[in-house]
Image (cartoon, rainbow, N blue to C red; front, side, top):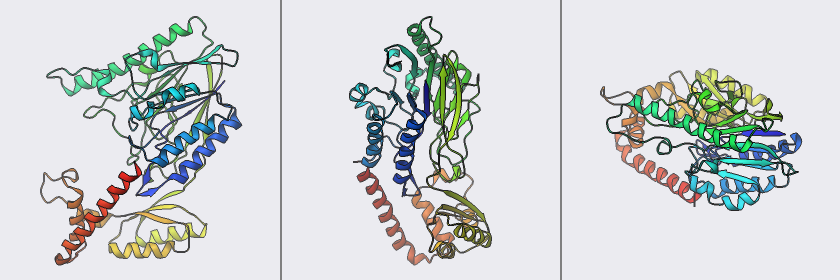
Amino acid sequence: MKILHTSDWHLGRTLHDRKRYNEFDSFLGWLIGFIQDEKIDILLVAGDIFDSSAPGSRAQEQYYGFLARLMGTCCRHIIIIGGNHDSPSFLEAPKEILGALRIKVIGAVSGDIADEIYVAKDRDGGTEAIICAVPFLRDRDIRTVEPGESPEDKSRKLKEGVANHYRKVHEEAGKLRGDDKNVPLIGMGHLFTAQGRSVEGDGVRELYIGSIAHIDGQDISKGFDYMALGHLHMPQAAEGPGNVFYSGSPVPMGFAEAGQTKKVIVAEFSGSSPVITGHEIPCFQELERISGSMEEISDKIAALKEKGSSAWIEAEVTSPADPAGIRTRLDELTEGSSMEVLRIKNRNFEAGALKPLHEDETLETLGDRDVFMRCLEASDIPADQHAELLRTYDEATFSMQMADTNENR
């Protein structure tokens, strides 16, 4: 029996306002082919199916289109849990229809532990695996609030609540398995474990505001033959007995993940002991981070152009340079190629524009309009032009908000 573990698709995600539907189409098409080629029996998707709790129509089409195509493959069981980005009610709305197609969806805890357990039957009707599919556990699901509790108390209660929930699900699944230890017990979850690795700027959120409640992987994995986790975007083994894994996101979520090898994980069972293998996902859209002086950046882009690269580029300029001149120069360098510069970081310009005016000021205390005004001043834009530029800025941000609203209808 082969189980495929994937997570954190984030369908509908953009990168600096660039739509990424083609990347997700390519990944989902590749995944269908991989499932067929590897003869996968069970698919586990460990949360964050969508990037937003209100996904747009195109992202929904990709999700349901993938599930429809999956029905024509060898995959016999599909288990999907909600992540912190997902709307539980949205995921679970079609659960009765999907359930008839052997697709188990658990968007949130229901109060009944049995709802988080899926018994996978083989073609002869025997039990071949029991999956404990625990969705993202929200604060209110796992602890009660008491007056006067300290941050340490809150963190401790969160950790205990998560560990207790997994223990209860495991105990219930153990009753279903009985004495047949050859039936593997599989765990699923969407959380941040202690020592879990992420990279700055990858969009991975702390799950419990105001706490450092990273969960001990050993506390949630006890008794499970394999634990399929989601939330962290970097494929990795979590701390524990060696059977707790994050599959990571299938495409880079941002430039912080540029060059990162993406994977799906296959756990092949003969009895209850798995052979675990990571399989590399092709790169569907190259991302490049380039840093240095304008001369160094020009040389690096020229080298990429010579290779025929079609990369999306983040360029960080470390030498003094005119902001308008940087954009013009980079456009000239990429002209005639498939490359695009999606983001320009001007370290000297940012340092001047965002320099605090008083000691209590931080970036968090500034609105986006405040930051825009600082940029105008740092660029030495004449004061008599500020009002017109601010109106243009307001129109642009309003148009973006309306576009997001229409996309999510």
